[in-house]
Image (cartoon, rainbow, N blue to C red; front, side, top):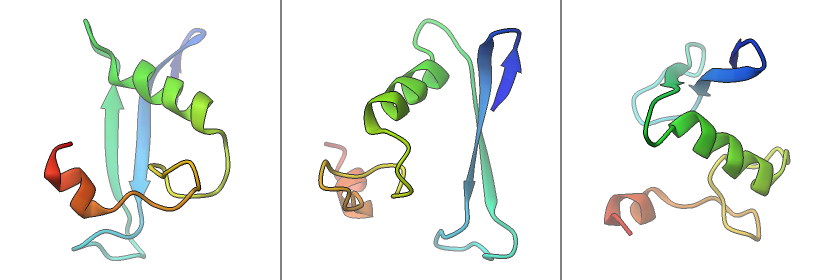
Length: 75
C-alpha cells in the first residue's frame, strides 16, 4: 500500500499463483485511487469486512476460495 498523508492511494496485489506465472516472479497488479468510484476504498472496505485471515483474497463466508468459473460467469 502507498500512502498519501493519512490516505491510501495505491494498493499492490502480488499474485504468486496464476495461469501463466512463474512462482519465483509474482505478477503485480496496482490499483489506484480514482473517482467517482474508488477501487482502493472499495478494496479496503472489503478487507475490513473480510478480516485479516491468511485465506484467499476473495472467499466465501466459510473461507473457501471463490472459483475462477464464478468470476467468469459475471454474476
